[in-house]
Structure formats: structure tokens, C-alpha cells
Amino acid sequence: MSQSNAVRLEHPALAPTRLGGQTLANRLAVAPMTRVSASPAGVPTPAMVDYYARFARGGFGLVITEGTYTDETFSQGYLHQPGLASPAQVSAWSEVTAKVHAEGARIVAQLMHAGALSQGNPHRDGTVGPSAIRPRGEMMPEYRGSGLWPVPAAMTAYDIDEAVEGFVDAAAHACAAGFDGIEVHAANGYLLDQFLTTYTNHRDDEYGGSVANRVRLTARIVTAIRVALGPDFWVGVRLSQTKVNDFEYRWPGGSADARVIFAALGEAGATYLHVASEGRNWIETARLDGDGDGNGAGPGGTITALARDVSGLPVIANGGMHDVEQAAQVLTGGHADLLALARGALANPDFPQRLAAGERLREFDHSMLTPMATLENAERWRRAVDLPSSDAAAAGSEEART
Ligand SMILES: Cc1cc2nc3c(=O)[nH]c(=O)nc-3n(C[C@H](O)[C@H](O)[C@H](O)COP(=O)(O)O)c2cc1C
Image 1 (cartoon, protein in one colour):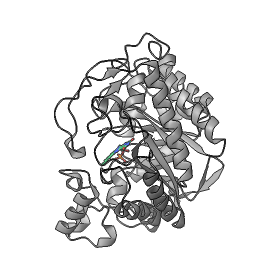
Image 2 (image 1 turned 60 degrees about the vertical axis):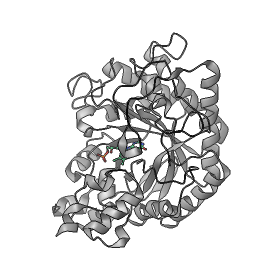
Image 3 (image 1 turned 60 degrees about the horizontal axis):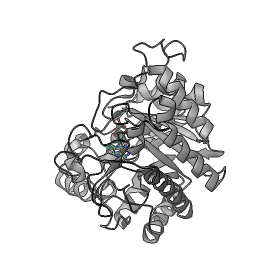
């Protein structure tokens, strides 16, 4: 993949930007990626320190961690997932944040409660969710799961309070570990998205029914963290229409739902909104109401542009942003302020440096995540294709095989 000089010299993703009162070196963020490589007790390992530092060294302005569980009750989603719930976890994460900061990047912890999509949790038998409805699809083998999801227990008011407390405590732990902020994971089908989604939320209390009610729990968590940690600690929110177990779902009310959701999270005190597109390219989920003009964000309007307009917050777009032409259009067209790359960052942990130098970008090779998305598996894959160990965390097939 060679880049034209125009794209290389003027690529808007390389311009510095501001987030939550701080400067970022550029507009390129590493998207959250679960790697199920922590110790059995959810403690980040030295390999994880190197993995995260590699992206910072490669020039990413912002690193967002993998989904990190918040409490030692129902939040954990996978075995070997890292947490921010114990002193040992906090201490190990502080090594990650120190290394990433030393390389000049900022780092945010993605806080995740898996809810009904938990497929490995040593702390509790069974799962919880908004309603006792079995999730669609099957557990994910690349994260150590197999078979149907269990039917979750419908959360009581006590369970909800406990989950909120877990998010607030985990955010305080993230702050103590040196993170610049946290990102509340309200996307991709996990607990907070289960509340937002009509077919997994059949509640008749203040958390069910209207979209204003379905977004209430996420907004409550954002405000609770903001109140606990003050104005300077970033509290981002990740949202998506699609899910790991459903690539087809779209917010039923289209732009009307989107407006309610974005406004509620802006009012709740979010620092930024991150709109993901699980299993899809950004443009495939960006258009609301079936056409570009129909979302109230003006001609060619998109979900991310609407998020900016309605909330007034910086917005991160995600989904196929390793396509440098699309990435440029998203920024120059006013659709987003930052771009988050997942597969593109795995293939090119030095993506920003390659973009700046006009170097060839590697293609992502899914076999590095097969049979499991672990760092160890990526290392085995790297050895098999004989790549230099400086790219141990991630690299791509094209260059490896030539
Ligand atoms: C291995 C892997 C793990 C992922 N884990 C997470 C996660 O922990 N949290 C999350 O919000 N999204 C997760 N995602 C989704 C990505 O952040 C991203 O939304 C998706 O891959 C689309 O972006 P891309 O086109 O840049 O790959 C994961 C994706 C991959 C490939």
C-alpha cells in the first residue's frame, strides 16, 4: 500500500489536537483490544507493558486499553482479562502508564462490565443483565469461550448500585495507576449496551422503556465518576449500534435516538464520545435513518458528526480507519476529531510514523489472533512468519512473507 505525497504530507490525522484540556501529539488512537493475556488474577504482565509501550513508541497520540473489568462480582468477561479492582492490578497498570507516558503518549483505561456477555468469571457463578434474556449467538473462542451464553439474572436495584460503585472505584484505581482518564464501555453488546438495546432490556423501571431511560445507567455512571474524580480526569464513553454478537442492530429510533443518547452523555459530564462500529466499517453504521441527509446533521451527515453537534464534545470515529483516504475524509469533513484504529494498529504498531514517513502500511493478518487473541499467540505467529522481535506485539502478513 503506497501513499501519495499529498496524503502523506498533509494527512490531517498527524495534526496535534486537544482533549480534556490537554494536548495530544496527533489524532490517532489505539482502539481498545481485548488480548486475554493477563495473569489468572487479572494482573497485567510485563508482556502487556511492552505491548502498550510499542504503540506509544510508534507515535500514537492516545492509547486506549483493552476492556478492563471493574469489580470482583459480575463484571469480568473473560478468563485472563485484566482488572482494575485489586491493589496488584493497580500496581501493574502503573508500570504500563509510566512506560506509555515516557514515550510521549496519553493513555486511557477502558472500563468494562460484561453483563450477560460474560464467558469467564472466577468471582461469581452465573451472569447478570438488564433482563433474563439469553444473548444472541455463541461465546467467542478467541477469548476462551464456547457454546451458548447463559441466561442472565435480571439485575435488582441493589445489583445496579453495586455495578455503578464498581465503575467509580475502578476509575479511582485508574487515576491512582496514572491513567489520564477512563473510557466507559457502553458499546459492542456488553452490560451498558444491553441496557441501551431494546431486545435485551425489557425492564419497566426507570432504566427500561424509552431511550432516555435505557441510556440512564451509562449517564449515571459518567456523572458518578465525574463527581468522584473532578473535572480534570477524562471520562470518555464508547458507544456502538452493532455488537460482538449482532452486526445488524441499529438504534431503532435512528437520529432521534442518537440525539437523546448524545445529549444525555454530554449533560452527564463526558469528556469525549467514541463511536465504534463492531464488525463493520465506520461508513456502514455511520449513516442514520437510511440516508446521509436524514439525521439532522446536515447534508452527508453521519452519526459521528451528529455526536459532535449534539454533545459539543470531541468525537472519536472507529471502523476501518487504516484506510488513509477514508481517515482523511472523516477528519476534513468534520465527522470526527480523532480516529481509533484496532486491526490497523495491530498490523502497524508504528502506524503514525509510517504515515508521516510515507512508508508502506502492512495488511492485517487475522491468523495472529487465531486460535486465541493472546499476546503469546501473536508472538508464535510472529516467529512462524519470521518478523523482527521489535514487532512482537503485532505485525502483518504482506511484509512478513516477502
Ligand atoms: C482483537 C480485538 C479485540 C477487541 N477488543 C475490544 C475491547 O476490549 N473493547 C472494545 O470496545 N472493542 C474491542 N474491539 C473492537 C475494536 O476496538 C474496533 O472497534 C474494531 O476492531 C473495528 O476497528 P478497526 O476497523 O480499526 O479494526 C476489539 C477488536 C479486536 C480486533
